[in-house]
Image (cartoon, rainbow, N blue to C red):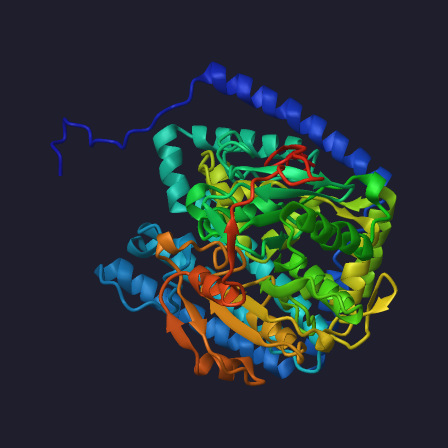
Length: 602
């Protein structure tokens, strides 16, 4: 103990400047009042539904089932009480003896929420953490243990129960997060003031809706340090610009590559920075690459339908590519929704004996929507009707609404981690090219999006022979004879690999190669060989059961990109002098890549 006449040292605490604090709080109060007023006016004007996600009815049905069978609920409550008693006992033992007994429940080592050492080393925070984990397990066991629920209802309950569980994590609250408390002590609470300012800025940017800032928006410029591959826009119409990239080799393969990205997001996920650009990789391998850059639509394009995206997308691109290269044949790539469009286009072309696409590659593409993963939670009649009503008023689906839906699929990583960093820690997010792209949202035309959701997700008509028609021509995937390459990702939350595998089996008339990459919907695709990161799995056999395919698959280290390049060049060994964008007769350069369409912000 220190001598009686010497005061015990206190931890350094930085006190905020009173004058500056007063100005900050006055500014925060004024901004908050303005935001609330604007938000209330907008809610009244738009007639917002109290339950737009139709969650209430699902939980009412679950509650009725629980009440009718109280035995299982009582058993679960008893189990929770028993676990809590054990947790109290082990915590008391630890506080009295200083020993650390085995936890009653352990967190996943990969769970970043509890990475700070204090969650384990401090008995109070360890108790808080374990209490949360026990409650989370209890809620999950109760909602997933209800029998006789409609599968869609059960999926919705499970999804939103996990959203509730994630939201209540002690890491999301200042008084129960050791990192936040430590920073508050170090800054004298300035982090919380700055965090409140960050929150208000995000609300102002979203006009009253929370638009979380995920990265430094000023660190990246489209056409500058991202989407920087050299090329020219050689064609445009209402829906897209067509980019031809400059060659990187003296000779190129005869067949060019045409890429159809999704129009849910912007194309430059495939051309982020030189080190992870698929475009740059392809031109370095000797391919002539064409990229469809979709427009960011407004209300003037409200009536554009799926047919229009085919006619003004791949079909228009094929004509221009032939003029630019002299080649009638192309190797086509479709990514996600772009792949779904490519499948429908191939079905249309097969019915018309059009063989200009001589190989087709599908990146994480659903063509059978029987099990569309957790996105299916948002597809029921009530939600679709409300969404269509909203889209018909505007003429489009707002990009931020689509982004929120996708972020909810990985809420801890894409929502709550930023709540902690930006609002509790009072920090600015790090510059990250992928998250900049993720925040560069796009709209969806009302007619097209309604067709897509109802005919693909809700009715699964693309998987049915002649289930949908494109420009009046019935589509049958089994009639397609084009060689196909399916690339799926093992941890994909948007296009589950078992579902993409099932869809692949509908192409019964085509030779198919199926490859499974590690990681998720983006990182598994954007995986350059130089990165030395995620592996992939290959298996020439294609049994009916995807798990049987995986059980007998061979694991291959590193990127799948070289595997695809070997596959596609196996159909085309002929080389020609490199083609320079804008130099072909009848085709002129309109502007430099990446063009103007991709720069349109919502």
